[in-house]
Length: 338
Image (cartoon, rainbow, N blue to C red; front, top):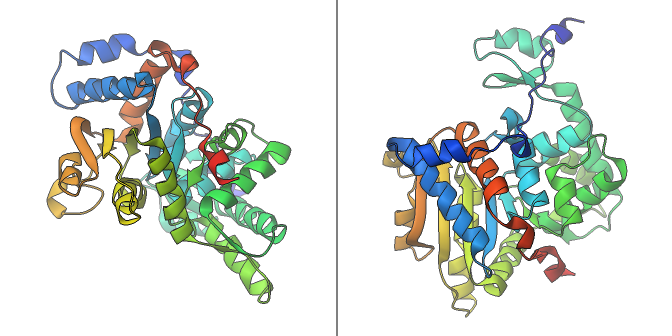
């Protein structure tokens, strides 16, 4: 089959436990530009983990999970570095859940003939390929999960929890982010959940069940995430990319205020991005800019202008080997909603 010649070389996900990046991070402290920023980001994240009252939010946008960082994020949950996740639907469904079903992403080329890829049902993310028919299987798995649930509105957190329950019983690849979050009561929120492979399965679910179907309620998402911020008080952000996840978690401070609760701004914040600040977009807005809105404190903040797959494994490996994550209390914020 012609398709097979494109899908020969699976993306290998980085294992942060396999190497200690401390010598690199330590060297970067004496360098300049993005290297020194990366070391500063690692130090701020380490502060989050040392702060006994700090809840750490991980936000994911873009395609770094498909590009080799999937295991990094799963390990951050496994090794108690992250207490809640806010992500795009694609990061959670098209990438993490997709591979947990036994499928893979493949190394490709940004210079491929996209018409030929289309003829072979291969989707391209820059230099990475996905089998479209396998994605459709992922869509229908989401539909099957929805079909089995009580027809009512769900937050994305609730639905992803059920996806984790499904993987706990049926995963072809164990220890995915979704499954580990389910097992460790780490809530995952996708405020734009249907902007992903999940959307196709959920549309089909609703069309086939016009009189009784579930729906995803993003307002409920916002309230649930804000409840975590109100209960946690002290919080830190580790943000990969920008987009909806970045703004969604930052806005919890304002939402709490609207609800009559005064909470502190996010005390710690790191963002890794390649977005250009000059366009005025959410993804590119600096953390200092967020402070003007009352969202982020500027005492411990760091922007890292780098493509995330090049620096996130360095930071995460440093934290794994050189912070006492074993002694952190697991927050288990998912239990707040039971």
